Image (tube, rainbow, N blue to C red; front, top):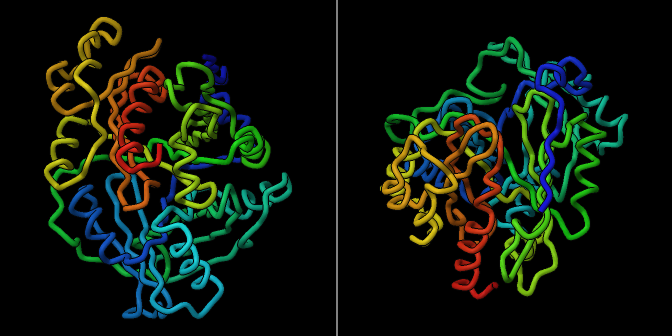
Length: 381
């Protein structure tokens, strides 16, 4: 197993960054029923509905709900009646792939400069920079293509104080929000076809100026039956992190193979959400009906010997099936949901970091075995 880490510090990288970013702007989902999706993520993920766009305020083709939790923003869009190329694209996307992520939107200080830099360095432009205005100010947006049908919308919203974008109105929370379950998007993971990982890593290196943060290959990212390879690219400040996975040859179908089969092509596999209290988060989400992957008790028998002491007792970790990993910088706690739709595609990770900027290397085998058990139940291993 090989793991490498970029030597550049965030501050050094910031000074030399050819493609500066401010962070993740939004994860945008194309779904069959945005109203029901918004309700699910409000009740099960504790998110707060903050903005809406639909036929009541001039959007005759789509309905969109914007939900937030701290700095994390999800947008759920469904088609009411496709009348434009965009509407037909969304409808066709849901028909082909089921509910899924269509856009990993990135906030940038200058959308025009970011777009032109990306296109000049090989990106396929989808939407040239344009302005949207309302009484709250001006937003500049542009979009480039990445793997599959996924896009990166580049959003410049400096000085804009509206609820989301021009065309959206403030929304009343669907349920009364309580203590938030998570406060930020930690990273977004893409699955690509066999042999395509290095191609997309090179894309992010060249087009967005991202650097390689981690690399995982070999036995520690494999089980008896399946394997994958993964590389992580990130901007200079480490605010935007994109692990990219591809399948590796194994005895049986890997989780990446299953995703590609059911999603139909490359796409976003899971979104990691940063929490300050993973215990409270998991308890609340379980109570709301969210299903998490199961970890056998044997994982916890020797956990203290190699993971060391954490702020959560081993008994609580065992009870909630939370995983631990430790590296030279600290430790992290993490847990993964089962797929949140009927197709075994998109799922979520809850992660609580204490110094470690890793991705749970020590848990890969336990995680993959848990996923394999679910694959076997679905008849897809």
